[in-house]
Amino acid sequence: MSPQNFYEEASALNLEKQRRQYLLHLHQFFDQIPLIPPQEMFNLLTKYHYKGQEDARKAITLLAYRHVRRLKRIYLEGIARDQLPPKSNYLMVGPTGCGKTFMIELLFRKILKLPTAIVDVTQLSETGYVGNDTCTILTTLLEHAGNDPIAAAAGIICLDEFDKLATTQNQARFDGQGTTKDVSGYGVQRELLRIIEGTEMMVPLDLNNNMYSQRIPIRTEDITFIACGTFSGFKGITTNMNPQIGFNASLDEGYTRTVQKIAVNFEEQEISDIENFQLYGFIPELMGRFTRIIALAPLDRDTLKAILLDSVVRKFHQEFKEEGIKLQIEKPVLDHIVEQSFKRQTGARGLASVLTKYLEDAAFRSFCNDVNTVTLRMKGKEVISELS
Image 1 (cartoon, rainbow, N blue to C red):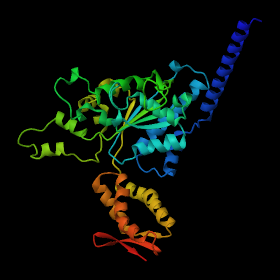
Image 2: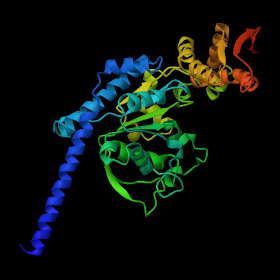
Image 3: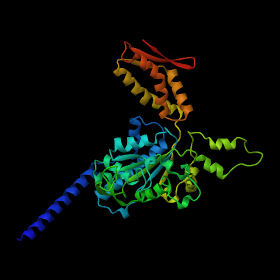
Image 4: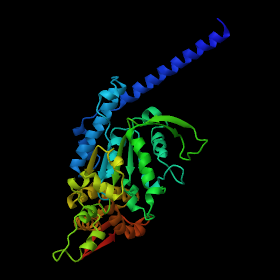
């Protein structure tokens, strides 16, 4: 055998070995992803202290099941993609603190253990401008996948603060916008179209994303995208489309349209009309990429109290316990905290904020001091702390 033939045969054997290793890794990865029934995932979310949003939970757990089932049919059963339903991308619309991103973290990271990137889209700008471009979304997903392109191509990307991409939110808007660069709105929306739909991209392994960055190919046709946003002021769009005029119109109607509540309920008809999102500042093509738009409601008082007891208070109890102090919070104080958070319209996020304020003075006086018990109780309309 000539030296040339020897090296050609050795190279072919090496390529065949690499191909077998790749196929083995691919099979092992998709085989170990658990295929959990939607109802079981729904119950597991409750086990991990997720409260409320039953309709949204049903929809997202079903999306998760379909995502995993589709991956297994493609990569384990060898079924062609064109013989399967296309992948789904969801948009979750709801007020702050209602549990949008928390649900995604619990379900995809903790329960399914899939590579999951939660990306703040307010940091994105159009390619060629200062800031992160849409390609770095996939870089973030790669980091969560341990730079494994196989795992990344089967992951989940949560586009958090998605509503901030609306061009009507850009205060630099001016006449002639259609013929100029809008680096924070339309440009990013157009670039997201290709990624969400499904394409192959050379993705940098570091967020610097310069010409020297090492890049690897990633296909996005199996990545599920879930966008989340509060869409503040969205309800005013439909109101302004049908204004009340005449003597029967409310005098302060214009004011209530401008200053709207934070915790609002979105009607199905409002979020199913793509024209409303276009008026809000989104290109219709991008909104058409979302198979389903889910409205999440503000959390009611009972749900807020359950979250307060199961999550927030439990963590503060543990903190004080580590300091050798027993923390006692009387029931009227818990009801007061829930009411304060409800009035602030910040959902579950407001619970920790309100309780922290009431515990600050007690923690300041008791930590590293000879204190055994801290008690929060109501005195009139005020919350006081007693040390003993």
